[in-house]
Image 1 (cartoon, rainbow, N blue to C red):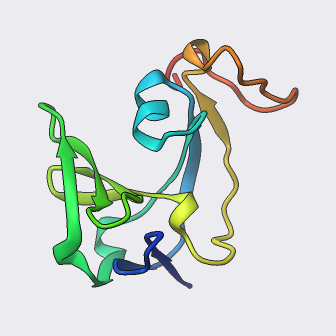
Image 2 (image 1 turned 90 degrees about the vertical axis):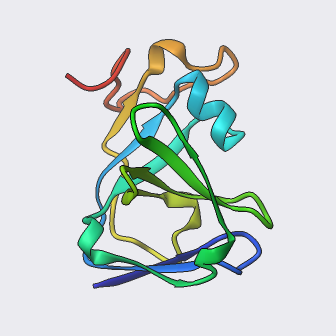
Image 3 (image 1 turned 180 degrees about the vertical axis):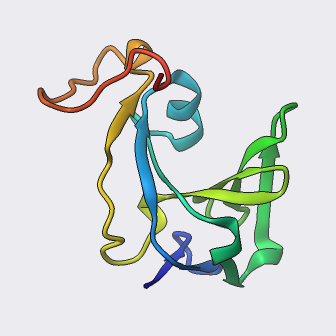
Length: 131
């Protein structure tokens, strides 16, 4: 299976030669700010199966002191992936093209979700991160 993705302006493109897995939606205040939304939606990838197809020179990064961060398009601002020590380990589901054959299995940090967000009944929720 090959999955592709791209930023909003289409200048940065990537592919994953494999399956996405462990999709989560994070509702913490940091993700709300980073993604300008009520939550982030990401799925794990094997770094060896991920590659940039075009526009890698347009990537900007925000990396924290632990070596974890986000990479985004400096032209349009789309957040494309999460990195750890320079390697992609998650892609944002909003930038994936087509059906990636993955479902969000966990909603995490719902204890700090926005007050205006209403979560549906019957979803797997964790007040903080999964235990």
